Every structure is written in C-alpha cells, then in structure tokens.
Image (tube, rainbow over all chains, first blue to last red):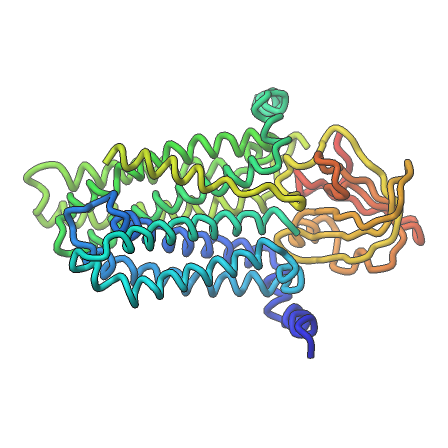
Length: 159
Length: 167
Length: 138
C-alpha cells in the first residue's frame, strides 16, 4: 500500500467528505485553528521575549515558563487536532504542497528547539546562568513560529 | 455609495500595487494574524489572571499593565493591515454582512477592554464585591467578543455578497 | 516598554515577509478582472473540496498555444451547491470550453467564470466574487 493509497483512502472517509463539502464545518474548524495558533504564538512570544531579555526582566524566567508554557502545549494540541481535520479534506493535495511540507518541517524544528531548551538551557537559565543560550533559544523559537504562521498562510494561497 | 467607494478604491495605486506584487497580500495577512495573536493572546492572559488561573502572585493591575500596551499597538496595526486587505479586494469584504458584524464586534471588544481597564485601575472600589463581579463579567464578555471577531473574520471568505454588490 | 514594543513590531513585520512563490494564486486580487480568457480542453481533475473547488484543465486558449495543465479556482462547495452545482457537475475526461479571469502574473491559471460541456451543450456558471450568483460580470 503506497502513501498515495493511504492518502486517497483518508480522503474518502465519511468524516473527510463531510469536512470537504460542508458549508459550515470547515470554516468552524478553521476559526478554532486560528484561536489555537494565536494562543500558541501569543504564549510563546511572552516566554521568548523574557528569554531574550527584552521584556518583564524583573520577573523571574521560571514564573513565565511555569505559567505560560502549559498554555502553549494545550493550544498546540488543539491546533494539531484542527489542523489534522482540515488536512482530511484533501490529503493528496496537501502532501503535494511544498508550503504544507515546509510547515511540518518547521514544526519539527520548533519541537527540537523546545526539547533542547528544556534539556540543556532551562534549569541553568532559571538560576541566571547560560543567558546567551537562553537568548538564542528564544530568538530561534520566535523566528520558527513566525515562519510557521507565514507558511500556514501561504498554504491558503496555493492549491 | 459603498459601490462608488469600492469602484474608486479599485483604481488607486495602493490597490494596483497589492494586486500586482504576489507576496504583498500573504505578507500582510501573516502580519494581521501575528497581531491577532498579540491582541487575543493578551486578552486571554489578562482574563485568565482575573479568574485567578495564572500568575496569582502578580496583581491584576500589573498583568494588565504588561499586556495592554502591546495590545494597543497591535490593534492599530490590525486596523492598518485590515484596511490594506480590503483595498486589495474592494468588491469583497465591504459587501458582506459578516464583515460589518465583525467591525461592530471589534468596537464592542475594544470598548469592553477599555471598561475593564477602568474598573481594574480606578481607586477604592477595586476590592469590593460588586466591582469584582463586574470585572469578571466584563472579562468573560471581552473574551466572547474577541472569539466572535475571529469567527466573523474567517467567515468573510465564505459569505455571499448582498444584492446589488459589484462583481 | 515602548522601545521594546516598537522592536517587536519591526521584527514581526520583517519576519512576516515570506518568499515569493511561483504558485501563489488565491485572494481575488491575483486575478485580472478586466479580461476573460477562453480555454478549450478536457477536465483532468475536479476537486470538490473546502476551502475552494479546483479544476485542473488539460487544454489551451482558443487563441492558440500548446496544450498544458491550467489550474482554475472556484468558490466553496457550499456556495456552488446553492447555485445548482454538485460534486459530479464535471468529471475527468469531460470536453469543455471554459472562460476564466486570468492570473495577473501570466501563469496558467485563473478564476472560473463559465464552462460549456461540449458533449451536451450544458453551460455551468459561477461568480467567484458574489459566490451566490451565476452569470458573467455585468
């Protein structure tokens, strides 16, 4: 069974057809996706600006990571779910779209950056050390997520 | 009258530029979305604090003071990018009811946020029960309004124009 | 805070500029609304899906040119259903003559205006902007 077979199979599921053809279901899923991604990006901006050291520097970094990263994760789960539902509308088309594929690559990069941050940078940064690495982590995160939003829009511009 | 305005817009150099530079509209849309993240995200964070769900060790006024200034700048950019997006397709958004619904909701959301700011920042009434309840009610309302704005914004692309709209 | 906000805005603006692409065609601004191109050919694919129904047409303009694949956009399935279309209105292999509003950048694509099925003479129309009406622009 080739990738194309799997994708075409996905496209013919009743759920996929409903999303592909329904009058209100697709725009609803899209709107929830927008809400989810704005919360991902909004919370990430708060943490990243603190990491980079340009905002709220009197408040400890730990306060921001503890309070805002859970929002990031929950919102990301919702974004992934709604994104997956929209993907079902025309899987073959999306997998052939270079902007969609690039967006997936950038999401992976965002995950790797966050993983590296948690493993190597977070604890020293909470103690006021490794500030250079923290800044880099924050800058990388901001750049990647802005790129994700831009690519997401370009998907909407291509067929 | 709106038809006349749209027809005029179609002939302006701004519109011509937006129509001919392939990257212009997607870039403006991306900036629009990033600013929504700042405004809507900020509104959510302020309201989460009001309901005591995050940053309970920071006073509500401090959280407000941290998020409102970037939200204000972002709203201005949203207005500018929004106007440019209308200019890029003058015959579309202006002639759909849902677009005007969105504009109404934006005005209400901004008014609600401003009311919220006044309730939180003005004087002695800050801690009494009635004001606390009012602050929570307005908080819930602003969130609903912003969610409405996002839904209305998405629906512009799916709506049909009203009778007599130019094609 | 003001300087930081300004810096953030500048950074956002710079980062929002995505690279131009050969495939961009969406937002009605991409289409030249002042002229129509008539294509003749056969339907390759009819993608009946949100957010936009898409036709891939194998053919050429009636004014001449080598046959190739043209990408034509319509509105959403919901809007098209309201004016009498269905997922089977066009099928792969159908021979058609089609009017489109061409892409401004000269690429092979456009916004759908009308199509005539050559086998039956049936005419299908859709107004991409109004989305609720059939028929050509007045």
